Image (cartoon, rainbow, N blue to C red; front, side, top):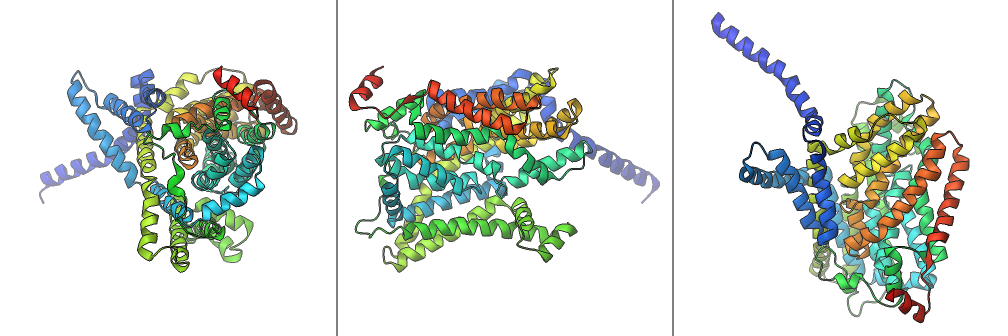
Length: 582
């Protein structure tokens, strides 16, 4: 090779090497650049999706148009609108494919479908009806049924998706028998899904939460045990705690307000809003398909064994997934921990934190399905072919859930690229009294989570910003912990309200409730508890008031608020008619 060719090759290589950092920098800063470029326009996709969801009551159409609008904004160059529309459509397709190609998302879709198959098998074997009848004997009132549903939700603490998909179908027949509205059932499921999973010290959430906390504290140069900080935030998770208490208070008092009360009054009269929405393809409201096969002898073991297998196998799969990842990694301290004390509390916690939840849940759901099939064949309820067909039919009922999840993830992707979250942060941040910072973080997290439909993404966006900001304003650890908790609970609050949230969607599906009806009835409750969270939680905590005083005060505020705004739903037939005519 002559010198001239060598120089050309050398210069070309150097230009390529030097351009790589700029390419990555440009990729990293795309959201920030777009936020600066488009400004308030970045809010269009989530706003369109949310507004259309309320207007059309069709989540699929609303999400699709929301994604199209975001892709159109990104694709639009000059005045060639037609070309931008074509590019936007192609971009929507690519985002959907990328969403499904992601291993985590694929695992979620598969576990949703697999759990659907298990639920259908349990129902056709008579297990669900047997459980319903057994619970109905204990739940002899609407009050008791709601408390049992709440308690069952607490038991499935390890994952919000599993909570929504397991508790809903099992409690739906009991709730219908006790004349509890599907909307109320969906609310109880939704309010005991993410809130309890976010609080649990062993769950699919804790890995993300502890990881974000650790990174944020490292970023400000403060050495802190991330798990210790996580534990310290638990008493300050005001929304999570208060929404759980709100369910119990309203159930025991039998008081509701807003759209939920109307739904409850109609249910008490024997009417069902959910059944009027059977034409809506987004939700399968008629649970007659879950009736057991004719002639089957009802047995609670036909439900307890498969569902128990699902729960136990999930816990084992979480541990094994995390254990495998840690032992195959390079963290010598963790490897030593698992070598010496593989089943210690610390080891179990670390394993759950490092687990791949989507894969673990799919593994457990698949195993539970196999166990249910073996039981059905062994008891001669079905042949092998019939059992597999029932399992597949159960999957079919949740295909629409998979479609909605893929669209929700695609919308989240386009929102992220547009820089919607970064624009909101720029818009709402500014000078303010330090004691208001936790409240501002809570509100900001709620807005972002509501707009994007993801608590996970919101935590990832806000945590690296909130901790340094709190540290710069007030370096006391207590203040930073309060601000950290505001990120975690604000994300859940916004996610709880959002009609495009996957957990909200799954709660609707599990309860057999029209999705938009669920959102309409749940939102006033979430906003009520959210307001108390700020006024009686984060503002006093920001002022330095002890949490042991703040939390009881907030709980009292919830009780008093329910007494003031709530009205009885256990009315006589004449009172029901008069109330419904208003």
